[in-house]
Image (cartoon, rainbow, N blue to C red; front, side):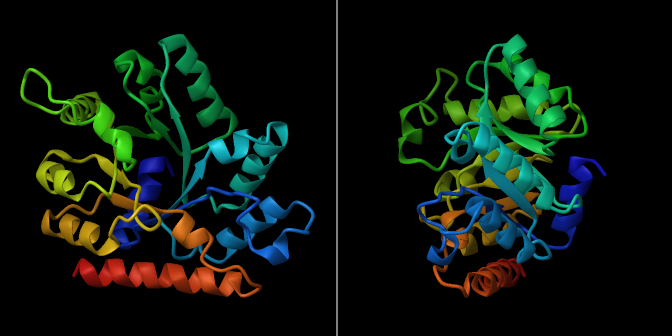
Amino acid sequence: MDAREKLQKVLDENKHICIGLDTDENKIPDYLKGEKNALQLFNKIIIENTYEQVAAYKLNFAFYERMGTKGFEILEETLSYIPSKILTIGDAKRGDIGNTCEMYADAIFNKLNFDSVTLNPYMGYDSVEPFLKFKDKINFILVLTSNKSSNDFEKLKLENGKYLFQQVLNSVNNWNVHNNCGIVFGATNLEELKNNCDNFNNLFVLLPGVGAQGGSLEEVTRLFKLNKNNNYLVNISRALIYCENSTKFPKIISETLKNYNKIAMETSR
């Protein structure tokens, strides 16, 4: 089963929540901090208590790279806990000259065996082309991000009247010849989401920003329902994985995810 088939299957089941594994040893529940391999155990507990309800898992490379070799060991071990039927996203935001990105693509797709990746397109087509050659993977390309400083560049107006992020969106649609492209569009940009949803076409949409960053799950799911678009993932990281600090954490995270799914399902009816 390739990445698109995995994702389409869970979306058809109306599962839209992606869990961001932004694992930080300073924020994990206190009862785990003294355990050997505490971060691996934390990730394993999350996966074991959510995999039946989740649409995807997104591993943010920064939280693992900062630990050097040990971090990559934790990342690979975490991937081994995720059932093969569930989409994995390598949140690496790669983007560099072509021969460099060939190495990045080889590492993420062949060595680490992620199903998908996040990419930064601001060096142009040749900075993402090596990833697009993997026809059985999904490439989530940054269009409009959820951070406050996205205004600095992404919302600059071009001579053709479009904003820069709209130009990127048009380009991604043109690059999607193998139907293996997706986009990253911040859930905190609700007005832009409303105004551009018609141009998402058959792209998969990854929406960060719900939870700790203030994006609304209800508003996002309602918008996609109105646009008759089911090809979206709502990423929730901190608000979910740090939802409880006690030994009740496994039970609470499962219940919290069920509640998010319930909200999404009821809003989209």
